[in-house]
Length: 311
Image (cartoon, rainbow, N blue to C red; front, side):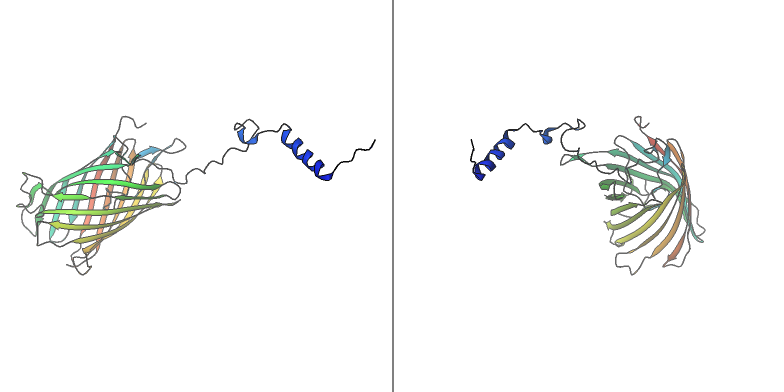
């Protein structure tokens, strides 16, 4: 007996059989079960994982030094901030020497504290800063005057860090003023009025060194005799050994229109880490100044990283 079958009926039957046949549901397979699609590709590890200030443990668990150009020992600063709840205390001595005028920061106290306020649901690494020097200065052959120099308060916002490109950026608004009750202005150790400063700090890590650039606008307040100034600085840092770092900077200070008050200088800094304490030294000299007077700079100090949670 012959069974005649229309080609369309055959096609429809094959479609129904395919639809009713048991099949594996690949999309529901659990990762690693041998079923389903392959697990999503993991992003590559960062080339420049975020590191900590001072001495820290890298991805291999080895203690190394933070070789980023920073203040101190340099004037140029980096965007990095202490960890949340961590103190960074710098105590150092610095001298500015010229043929006629000399000034010494006998004890410069630079205290910083790390916080992490939440903004739009994200923590913003932030640093609170207060600094004040105990100074001695003289002009010509006059006797030295001893007292407190200008105090400074600032807040550094490290608002951008990219661990894949090694780029980080921070804003660091600050105000400089005479500490109350010190009579620093009368002694010639502090400026009249106050000074508002807005630095932009940028750092870029490379495989063999770290580059930092700063641009700062400074505006005097309540002192018509002083003019606004701008500062541009660039620094390079590199670790020489696990706990020894070298850094160098070129920095230029001038009027906002670059027509006067030029002072360009070069500084070299060395840092050596001793677990939670770092010691550093700084040497520098002017490259150019409008008054034609050469200045030499020398400084030594210690950095303390205080955080009970730090391993």
